[in-house]
Image (cartoon, rainbow, N blue to C red; front, side):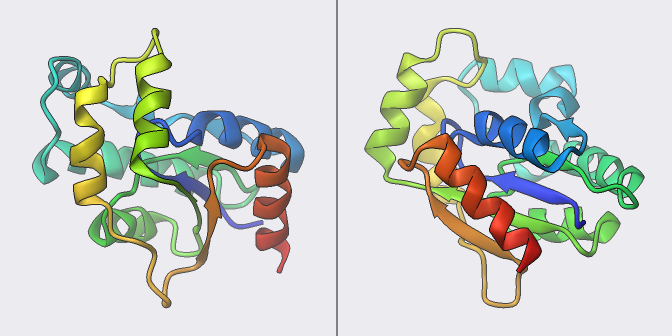
Length: 163
């Protein structure tokens, strides 16, 4: 079982789908938010987008966690917005499979606005979409529409892992 990264912009449903997928597969789950250093959380809470330098320690920590679970498989959430970020994850987990939860900006904006217990403000949705680089043909992964039900997303993601 390859390590799985459920990716997408903030508000795409990464955690909800990631938890359900890990349960379905019977593997550990890691939430990317838990890997952020405090300084990153503070910056985003203040409405400031992270830059590439801010993200590097976070991405390395997630990649190391994936490597620790390479024998058993695991599911982790991570925005993984840019190809370079996914490459950093693959440095530690070369067989990683990416499940990109894709959707339109207004749907995501509404979802983020409706969240009350998350540090990422609605004001950062635009910067997330601006930074997003879709999966390329040479990247192992699948793109799923985030407006599908969680059950359907988990089923589609699970199928992509075994295909």
